Every structure is written in structure tokens, then in C-alpha cells.
Amino acid sequence: MTPLAGCLLVSALLFSIGLAGALTRRNAILVLAGIELMLNAANLNFIAFWRFGPNPEAFTGVMFVIFSIAVAAAEAAVGLALILAIYRHARTSDVSEIAEMRG
Amino acid sequence: MGMTVSFLILAIVTLAGGVAAMTLRRLVHCALALAVSFAGLAGLYLNLGADFAGLAQLLVYVGAIAILIVFAILLTRSAETELQKVFSPAGVMGALLAIGVFGVLAWAVLASSAARGAAAAGPAPSSPMREIGFILMQRYVLPLEVIALMLTAAMIGAVILAVREKPLSAASPRSESSRELRA
Image (cartoon, rainbow over all chains, first blue to last red; front, side, top):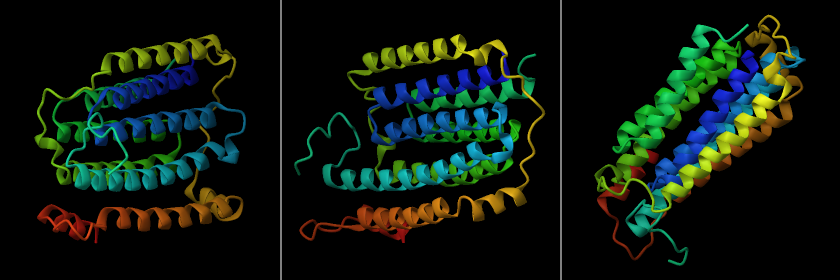
């Protein structure tokens, strides 16, 4: 197996772990953590294709990963603030109990 | 040709951290396992020659997001929930779906030309910080400014979301503490 395929397989496994966590966990914070894991799997793909792709001197993959990390940081901050606001309103962070948007 | 030992070790650390973060019962343990997984990913980036991305991953994910998640766990008292209610009722379906997604992805990777050694890996490309800085300031300066604006907007939005209280409900000590932490 080539190194590129190894990276892609690790990334696919990490994506599946994150997806399983986001779909199965009840706590909203861990759902967010699963989404973060999926984003990180995509970042690993970018780095792998940059490293083993045809034009590494253009730094395209690295740039995309840097911007993606910045977007993920903003997403985590807003997402956790939303979870805090919902917790303050509904007194729970269990996603299966927060089933309606009507306050 | 194959994968190096360091790559395998880092991949195992990353995946084990991810599995632990998604399956452990205590939420604080989950957050720590998540930090281990992020650190393993940073090591993978460094292993692949992307110094800047690896260090950014270490700073942002291990340094900031993991701590933010720990704060959210503590502020929402999620650590005190009953241990039986860890997985949602539709958990089996979700796990089966995730396994199916991995099967499709792995099949696509192994069936592609990437697995057959079509792309010979050259020497690791050097990524000096100086060059990345020039690229960031010249070719990617517009995305950089847009990202800066978006981070500012996200910060303001997070503060507004976390601080706002309904005037009727008496301010609880918990919301007071979150306000102090956010400030």
C-alpha cells in the first residue's frame, strides 16, 4: 500500500469514527466533537494530497488546511455558545430531549 | 514501499484517541481523549512535512478547542448526567451507517490508482515558514482578510449568544460564572 493510500484510509477511518460519534452520542457537546473529528479527517486528506500530489510547491493543500482550521475554530466557538444558550433555556444538553425549536 | 513506523504509530494514536473520545462514558475523559487525537493529527501533519499546518493544529485544536470543550462540559453540568444515557436510541442505526460509510470510502480508496503506486512519492517538499508567509500575504491575502472578518464576527456572535439572558428569569449563579469566563 502506498503512503497516500495509507493516509486516505486513516482519514476515512477517522471520518467514520466522527460520524458514528455524531450520530450515536446523546450529549450535544460530543456531537460537536464528532463533527470536529470529521473536519480533521478532511484536513488530513488535504495534507496528504498536497504531500503526494503533483504540485507541492504551490502550497495549496496547506493553505486550505490553515483556512479550514480557522473556520473550524469559529464554528466550535459559536457551536459551544449555542449549546450553552440552549442549556440555559432547556436545562439539558441531551439532543434527544431538545426536540422542538419552539420555546 | 510502505508506510513508515512513525506514521503508523501516529495514526494508531489518532484513531485510538478518536475511538475513546466517542465511546467513553465520562465527558471529561472524552474531552481529554479528543485532545490526544488532535495532537496525533498534528504529529501526522508534521510527519507529512506540513510544519505550519501541524503547529497551527497544535495551537488551535489542542490549545483552544479542547479547552473550550472542557469549559462547555463544566458549564453545562454534563459531567453529572446519568451514565446509562450515553448513546441515543437510534445509536445502532448511526453506528451501522458509519460502518457503511467507511466501507464505501475504503473501497473507493483501494480501488483507485492511489493504492497501486501510480503516484510515486517524491522527497518531502520543504515548506519554509518564510515562503508560506509570502504566499499568505500575496496570493491568499483576500481569503486571509475574509477569515479575519469571519473570526471577528464569530467571536462577537459567540459572546452575544452566551451572554444574553431573558429579563424575566433571575440570573442564576451559573450564568454569572459563564459571563465572567467569556469576558
